[in-house]
Structure formats: C-alpha cells, structure tokens
Image 1 (tube, rainbow, N blue to C red):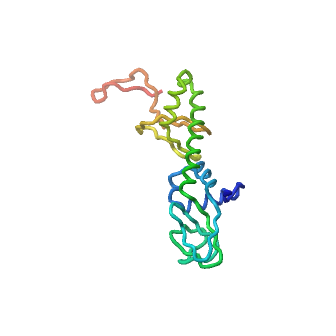
Image 2: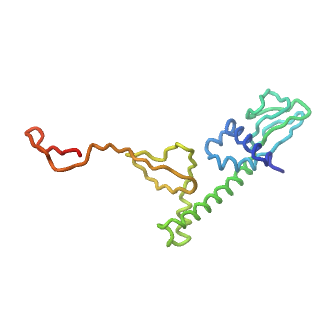
Length: 193
C-alpha cells in the first residue's frame, strides 16, 4: 500500500493532523513524526463496516458514520453508514517498523558525529556504539533552553545539527584591587575599578 502523502504539503497536513489527534504524537519529535507519515495510509471503508480494527488508529476524513464524527477527528469506534467513507489510518506494526528505522538512522548519525569529536576519535567503534545506544535525542527550536546557569544536570550534551548560543548571566561588582580603607565595622574594603 502506498503512503497517504508523498509531497511536502501532504506530509505537513498529516503531521498537523497527527499532532492534534494521535496521543502518541506527544512522545515524538517532529523528525520522527514526519517519518511516521510514511506509515499513514488512506483507507476506504464501506457500508456496515466497523472501525477502527485492533492495533489501528483512524482519523475520519469523509463520508457518514455512526456515531457522527467531524472531519479530522480521531475515531474511537464507528460504523460506516454510506456507500464509502474515507479515513487516515495508522497500523501499530507499521508505525513501529518506521520508528525502528528512524532510531537506527539517528544512532548512525550520532555515531558519525561522535567519531569526529576529539574526545572519542581514538576510541574503538564498539565503545562509541555503546555511547550511541545510551543517547537520547532532543530536538529543540530556536529559543529553547537546554540548561540554565546554576542548575545541576546529570547530562552531557552533543550538538549534532544546527547551532546554539551559550550565555552566562554574570553580575560584575567590580574588579578586586588592594584595600583602600579599613574600619571597625568593615575591616577590609575592596575598591571597585
């Protein structure tokens, strides 16, 4: 079966639809979600047919069903009441196959990147592969923060693609120099230059 969309505009429409309706979409980054569109199929159902089937997620597109659904709504259970109704369908197995390929592609991309990091250049391939297996991928948009100054983190971050800005909040109270005066209340006072 052919994918529901092959052109960029169709893929964008499916991604938008899945973001609104598919509960699992919240777990996936945009890159993985776009790959999941490869598993999305246009499906026709006929009079009297009940949907969705086990291990299937459906979005209503056209026709008449009972109970009534609006265009773009996720279907929990329905019976087709016209000659033909159309749905966008995702089968669990197809999605898992696509996501397995996606994870492997991301690991390969991470391996290629880490192998070029000076710290890992002399490491064996098997050690770098072990590191890649432990990685979790985060896809951030412009303005997203990775970590804030003063927060403790247990993570090491590798930038695989794009760019980032490292900023540091710094309050400069002056540069220390020799004491300029002494008093009982303030035994040593540092001059700000």
